[in-house]
Each structure stands twice: as structure tokens, then as C-alpha cells.
Length: 469
Image 1 (tube, rainbow, N blue to C red):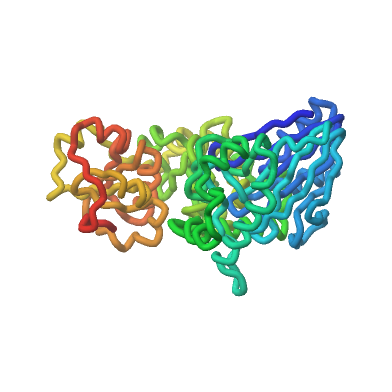
Image 2 (cartoon, helix red, strand yellow):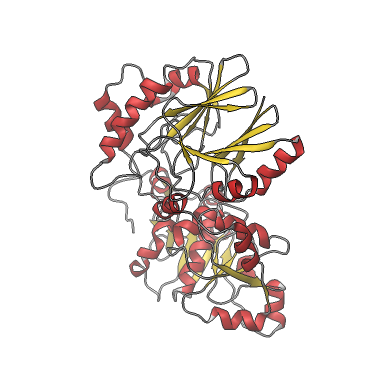
């Protein structure tokens, strides 16, 4: 028996490869099927099952392409109603995989169809639980993403209470817990940076698994402190339930190398977005006017999902040479399938063609600190509200990147704004969006809050009277 966790940091997502005696099960795969197929081919094994713990909201699963290419059976737990062929397992159903068994445990709460998969080894001993978004390390799944007209988040939390106590907490304590997500995912609020643990340790350390906890206490705790989920979450859940186009077609369309003159003409379409995916240290030095920066080397897909509202938006993109396919695949992982090509030759080709190039002013943290005066300098902290409340510079206002599109009217296009985030990535995103929307006098603080703290500028903890946008 072989078990491998395949963790993708950008999405804080874990998929799983389980192999026994020439047969393979893939649990919660990402959109691109090739890595899983390559693993099975290398082992001389065939993929028998694609197991889905639920209809994922924060990424588009690879179940359809993987099943089509390998002949594997897609499996969901009870109550799931996908718009494509799949095996809907019963609670407690056992699936044979080589010399091992995978038992389906219906664990509603995060969503109603949520299920966990218990791996039983060759000796009949429970080995590991693939808990999806039901149980995380240090947390449990948020119960507010599948609310409907006839079921509330409190109802879902109550289902989750029962699922944990009746299906999971009764398992042997040495069972390994393999969740769908880790720290950084918006599917929970208190996830550990660790990506697996034993059930026994979670019973000791996970706040939601306290044995003396009442149902009422549990419901109150898991429904409090939840931030608004990114706008693309419900859209991805629908895609996973109804189906999607083949990644092969999306790659073929997106890998069109477009000459600068044609790129310029295509970009003139009001619906089209120019997405610059180069590093945040490079973008400010020269970019195509009207382009939005979201660098592929950081939390690319989640920020695209948070900031580009329409999944069908035509996307032209600029990438470092050799990273074009990576950009398209990572966009598709969160449902952005309408990439229509990239700038052939990149920004240098654009310059060589004689087209305008804009730049973004930047300042070193030390130089900013020497000139900083809270009374006459407008500085925006674009980190999340929770980061800002924890600690920030005196006199600096919070202007979170994740709500920037709905707060453009709270800034004055005639003012000069200095922007910072934690390390320099998000502030460049924010500056590019503001620039696209007519804010011309912007300065990015290089290195962000990390560097600003080193300058000795006065910091403050959150106070009610602090001015916030």
C-alpha cells in the first residue's frame, strides 16, 4: 500500500494518491489530471476511483478530465446530485482497491453531501481518514458555504457536530487525519500549518473536538468569526456539480502567442482584462497600460478569484517565458477558462513595437520612514482587516485588497497615496487596480510591513477610534 499527499501551497489544498496491488484511488484532485496519471503510469497501476469528498467551493476539481482519460469511476457520498455520471455511495459502503478497502462515511455539515473516506489496510486495520472539509488540523469546516432557503448555517453546524462525534471521534486514536486544506485556506478559520495529524492528537488540541462541548457551544463557536468567503466560491461549487470543458481545449486556446499589434487590438475590448503575471519586483519597472498585476509566483489563483468577478472574462496575459502554460492551468483551477492568449515576446516585444509603457513609483522602507508624517502623507495598508487590527503603523488607514473593487469611491484621485502590504506582493496588485481605475499618483513601499517595522516607525494595536476605510 502506498499513500501520498499532494499539497498545493497556492490553494492550501491537498489531494491524495492511494495505491494497492496495481489499483489507484485519487482523492480531491486538482484540475490538471496529468500529474496523477503520470504517477500511476510510473507505478504500472491504473486509476480505478476518483473520490470526491464534496462539491468543492475554492477550486475546480479534476474529476471529470481524470475519469474521462482513465476510465476511473467518480465517487461521491450520499445525497450528492452531480449533473454527470458518478457512483453515489451509501453510508458505510466499502470500495475495494487492490488489497485495501476504502469505507465511505457520510459526514454532512460543511455541506450536506460531504463525506470522509476511511482507508482500511491489508490487515483490516483503520489506517487513515481523508476528511475533506469536515475535519482540518486544528479546525473544522465552515458551515456557511452551502446555506439554502431551507437550511441555515446553524443547521449545518448541528449536522457537523453529529458527524464529528458519531463518525470520526469514535475511530481509533492512531488513525491519521488527512484533510483537504491547510493554513491559508478560506474554508476554515483556525487551520494549523501542519497538513496531517493523528486523531488522538486532534482530540487533545482541536477546539471543536472537546468531548465536554455541548451542541449549543459547538454551533456558537464554529459559526462565529467567519469572514465573507471570496466571491468565486459559490461559482466553483456550481462548476464542480454541473461540469466543465476539457483542460486540453482551454490550454490550446490560451497558449496562443499574440503579436503586440494584435494584442493591442484585442485588449481594446472593454470586457477583456490584461493580466500581468510577472514577479512583483519586475512589474513596476514597466507594464502595459491598463493591465492588472497578479504574480503567478505567489497566491495567484485565490487573488484572481477574489478580484476578477466574472469567470467568463476574456483574459489576455503577460508571463515570463516558459511560464505560459502554468498561468493557464492555475487560472483554470479556480474556473477562469477564458484565457485567449499571451503577449508574444513579453514586455520587451511591446516596447520594441513602440507602444506606451507605464511604470509604478516605488520607495524603500527606510526612505519612506524618514519622510513619513501621518498628518500630510496619505498611506494605505492593503492587508486584511485582521492583520491591520493586530498591528499597524500609527496614522495609516486600512484599505484591504480583497474589497478594493467595492471601495474605489472612498479614495480621491487627486491625492497621492503610498501603499504597503505585508511583503510587497498585494500592494503592487492594489496599485495596478487603482492605476487602471484612474489613480495616477501612487507609490509602492518596497518590502511592505516587514521592512517598515525595521525602520522604527511607531506601531499601534487596534483601537476603536482608529480611522479605517
